[in-house]
Structure formats: structure tokens, C-alpha cells
Image (cartoon, rainbow, N blue to C red; front, side, top):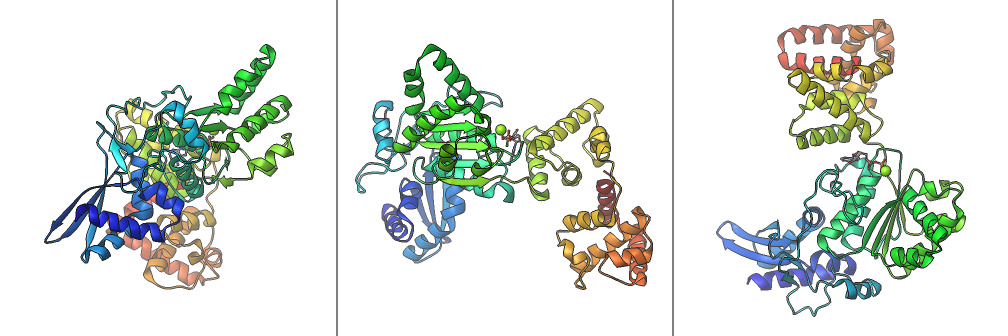
Amino acid sequence: MTEDLWQRGCERLAAELPEQQFNTWIRPLQAAAVADSASGVVASLLVPNRFKLDWIRNQYGGRIEAVLSELAGKPVRLEINLAPRDGAVRAAPLSTPASHVVAANDGSIAFKPRVAASEPLLVPVNGANHSPSPSAAAVSRHRLNLGLTFSNLVPGRANQMARTAALHVAGAPGQMYNPLFIYGGVGLGKTHLMNAVGNALLSDRPDARVLYLHAEQFITDVVKNYQRKTFDELKAKYHSLDLLLIDDVQFFAGKERTQEEFFNAFEALLAKKAHIIMTSDTYPKGLVDIDERLTSRFDAGLTVAIEPPELEMRVAILMKKAEAEGTPMPEDVAFFVAKNVRANVRELEGALRKILAYSRFSQKDISIALARDALKDLLSIQNRQIGVENIQKTVADFYKIKIADMYSKKRPASIARPRQIAMYLAKEMTQKSLPEIGELFGGRDHTTVLHAVRKISAERQKNPELNQQLHVLEQTLKG
Ligand code: ADP
Ligand code: MG
């Protein structure tokens, strides 16, 4: 029953999913057990690593459950677990470094086992899984930063496309999205994402030939080999890779010889279906002083942007990073910081470091007041006047309504109340008169504003929860 249910599930999924997706994600899965009890059936699957686990759960979990339930004729709950570290379960056969190039050449890599469907799809590999333990700044021989992984990259709207594409590449390099070109401003996670792909691929295939390089390192390499006239070495090194990660390609500007060598490597790698990921501060056509022959190729796979993170993502990043530092940050503090530090993730990290240091030094718990002290310099630069618009935006963010609802005529309490709170704060924190405020809230009468101000200020006296919320909002607005 066990094997059979999964087998039949696979057949069904194979029929409904695109072949490539099925071969990449579903086919290598192994049904570890199917337990049948009165409350239903639990099917558990084993996957080799965490990023596959997340991906399969998110992308296919629901569908797999539905298919198995239908076939079993009763509810089947899916459990996906990591294969045990010892004798880790891996896709078979594991290619040796020598056979590996062949494997990459014909496009069938470890994810697509070259075995007949009737053979076991997964076999244990003894002791083949001694990956170095990741520590924050550890750098591998692949020059990857081992601390930059998918699991500590907070997902959000700002990086959704780039992250999804990167996960695909990590799961099936050389197939779709080649080359992958990721662009965006500083400190938004380009280098992180790129390293995550390399680390994920190596956790699946420790023998994969991966190299991460900043564009400047590539330039240095070209210059060195140029002086020594050892271009064959250069070619041998780059052209044999499975995955080349080149960071900040805008640095190639004006470097003609480098561009030429990069072009050669690029063509050689694509021809044998090795994957190339590049990052840049701008999209390919926006690159200056780089040969059009190259930029047009940069654009030939998939080009995705990483945007600055929106408020909620900034809150999530702060909380996750604080947690990782062993000092959880209360949500209201994270909100205060995220609201005031907007530019990019690197700045958020800087703010967090300051707050943690300040808290340790002063031996005080993390609070808004403490964060404000710790970030005094940073916040005073902004030194902005509080405007009604800013109040509306902050309150809307806080209560998760649209800014437009501040001007709209809608009356449900979930909207009317935040609007009244915003009016109250506008009166308390700006010099505007009641009619002026009414005007700024969609042309409301000054008596409406007065009513809101009285109501909220009276309620504030009696309702500690409201008082606390107003406190957070005031602190946030004062910056
Ligand atoms: P870029 O290469 O775009 O300039 P980095 O990849 O160096 O940016 O990111 C800057 C810092 O922010 C790094 O420490 C990185 O780990 C962190 N970071 C960026 N995006 C995220 C994210 N979504 N979740 C967690 N950390 C992030
Ligand atoms: Mg970078």
C-alpha cells in the first residue's frame, strides 16, 4: 500500500505537472512511510535539505496531499522531513567529479536521476555528506560565504521574483533562467541571494564546481594572466565550472580585455549548460561602457530586480535577525526602527547592531525608548517635521489599512477608528487647525475632526491598550 500509493501519486503528478518540474522536484522524493490510522493517513516524504523542503512544501504540498487523498479515498496528511544526516538520502547516482562534466553537458544532473523508473529513486550514500558547518563569515574554497543561505534570507514582495528564480536555479542549474541577472540598489540582498544559490547547490551536490567572484576579482585574475600570458589557465579555471556567480558586473565598465575574457567564459559555460548568475546595480541595458554584445547576452535568460523592502518586510527582517542574535526584539520596537530606517537591509542591520550594543552596555531591555537613544544620531539627521500625510501613512501602516481610506467616506469601524486616531494625532502633533485637518482627511467638516479628537483622547485615559498603541505611534512619528 505504502509504495503503491506514492507510486500512483507520482504517476498522477507526472501527468499534470510540466515535465521539468516533475523531474526536478517530485521524482526524486522518497516515501518514507505511510501510516494508516482511524483519523486518516499520514504520508511522510524525505528530502535532502531544508531549501528543498520549504520549496516542495510551499509549491507542491497542497497538490500532493490532494492527489494522495483522492487516490486513497480518505484524507491524507503530508509530512515532509529532512533525510537523516548520516547516510543521507540523495539522488542517485551521485556523479563523481570526472563524470560530472558529462552529466552537466547532457543536461541531466543529479536532480534527474539517470535510472529507470522502476529502480529506487533515492539511495543512501554513506558518509558523503560532510559539509563544513556554516559560520557567519566562513568562506569556502568556492569563495562562497557560507553564512548566506536561503534559510536566513527573509522573503518578501521586494525579493519574491529574484528569490523564486534563484531557488529554481539552485534546484536545477543549467536549465531555466540562464543566465540569471539580478539587479538592484546597494544593501538589498543581491550578494546574499547569489551565495545562497551556491550554498544550496553544494549542499545537494558537494562535488559541483561552483565559483563565486566579485567582478573586481575577475578583473584581477584577467590582468594577472595577461601579464603571465597564461590565458589557457584562465580558461581552464572558468570554463570548467557548473555554476559561476559574478557579483557587481557593473565593475566591468571600460575593461575591454576583461569583457572579452568574460564573454568567452560566458559562451563556453552556456554552451555546456553550466549556469551563470550575475548581479549589478542596474539592468543590463542600463550598464555603461560594457560592450553591447555582452549586455544583450546578459538579458537573454531572466532579468529580475530586487526592490527595497517594504515596511512589513523590514519588520520581519529586524525580528529575524534579532532572534538570530539571541535577543528577540519586541514587535513595536521593530516597527519603530523599520519605520525610521528605510533605505536598505544593510542599514537595518547597522541599526540593530547599535540597539543590541546599547542594550547590553546599559543592561536595559530593548524598548522604543532605548532604540531611540541608540539611534539618536541616525534619527536626528532625518529631523523631519511631522506632517499630516506622514501621520496618515504611519497610522495606516500600523493598522494595516490603505492610505486612501484616510480620505475615503467608508465607515466600517476597522477603517473609521484608525482614521479617528490619525485625526487625533494630527491635532496633537502638528500646528494644523481643525478645518485644515478636516480638509486633509478628504474634505471633512471640522466638527468631525473635533469629535474624533475628543473621543480618542477620552478613551485613551481609560483604555491601556489604545494608550500603548498611541504611544508607539507617537514615538514612531517623532523618530
Ligand atoms: P547587496 O549585494 O545587494 O548590496 P547584500 O547581499 O550584501 O546586498 O545584503 C546586505 C546585508 O543585508 C547582508 O548582510 C545580507 O545578509 C542582508 N540581507 C539583505 N536582504 C536580506 C533579507 N531579505 N533577509 C535577511 N537579510 C538580508
Ligand atoms: Mg553585493
